[in-house]
Image 1 (cartoon, rainbow, N blue to C red):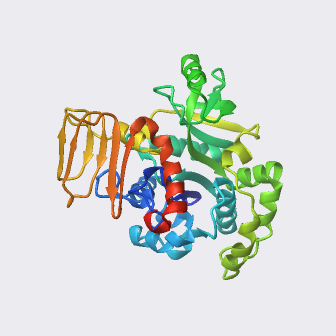
Image 2: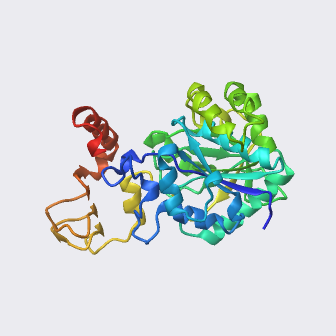
Amino acid sequence: MNKNNYIVIMAGGVGERFWPVSRITRPKQFIDILGTGKTLIQQTYERFLNVCLPENIYIVTNKIYKDLTMQQLPDIKEHQIICEPTRKNTAPCIAYASYKIGDINPNARIVVAPSDHIIFKENIFTDIINSALKTAANNDWLITLGIKPTRPDTGYGYIQYNSKSSFEEDPRLKKVKTFTEKPNLELAESFLKSGDFLWNSGIFVWSYKAIIEAFEKHQNEINYIFKEAIGKYNTPEEISYMDTAYATCKSISIDYAIMEKADNVHVFVSDFDWSDLGTWGSLYDTREKNEGTNSVIGKNVMLYDTSNCIINMPDDKLAVLQGLDDYIVAEYDNALLVCKKSQEQQIRKFVNDIKLQKGEEYI
C-alpha cells in the first residue's frame, strides 16, 4: 500500500435532518442507523483500509466529538483526530487537514470524504479511489467522484462533464464543465435527460500540492490563516493557534470556495451504488421494506393499514401505528417525531423551534 496515500474523513456535522435519533451529543455519523452493528463512521473508516495505511487516516471533527471518535475507532491515535474549535463548513477543515498532512509528507495524495455516506459496491469504489490517487500523483488536478443519477433528485448538487473528454489514466475520468447546486425539479429532469450530468458525491481526491495551490489562487484569505501556522503543525502550538485563528476563518463549502472556480477539475463517472444519507427519505430508499413498503427498525412495532413509512423505534418500546401513509415515525430518548416524508425538509425548522422554545435538552 502506497505510503503517500492519505484519507481525511469529515465527521463534524450534527445531522439535524435525522432528529430525534441524531442529537448534538450523538450525531448520525456515530449511530448504527442502518442496523448493521456498525456506525456510519466505523463503516467509512474500514472502507478506506483497502486503500490507505491505518496511520494515514485522519478524522476531522468538532472537539466535542473527540472522545466519541476515539471510542468508536480504537485503532486511531489521538494525533490522527483533527479537532475544529468551531464549525466553519468544509473548505476551512480541508485546508487545515491538508496543511497538517503536508507538514508530515509534502508528497501526500489525499482523499477527502464524508463520514456518513453509504456505499454498497465497495469493490468498485475502491478501484475508482485507487485510480484517482494514481491520477492525482501524476497531475495537479482536483478530482471529484460523480454518481450516475437514477432520478431527478433536487436534494443533490450536479456536475456536468465534457462527454468528449477522455484520458489515458482511466476512461471513466472526464473534464468538468459546470457545477449546479440543488436545482429545481424541471432543471433536474433536464439534467437527467441530457446524459452528461452526475450527482456530486462530495468525495474528492488530489495531491497536497494541487489543493494548496487552489487555495492560494481562489481563497487566499483562508489560505493565509493556515499558511501562517506552518511550523506549528504537529506540535503543541497547533491547538492554541487554531483556537484563535479558526474563529476568524469564513464559513464556506469546498464546492463554492474552490471547485466551482478552478479550471483544473476532473470527475470520475462512478456507479458504486451510493447514498449521501442526508435525510430520513434517503434512508428509506436504502433500507429493506416489508410487504406494506414500510421500512422498520424496532422489535416491537405493530402496523395496521400503514404503508410507505419509515419507522425507527427503540427495541424496548411498543409502538402501534394505524392508518399512516408516507410518514416518518422516529423516537429516541425524550423525543418523538411524526412527520410526513414529503415534508421532511421541515425537520430543520422543527429543531430550530425546539431550541428556541424548549431548550437544548431535546436536541
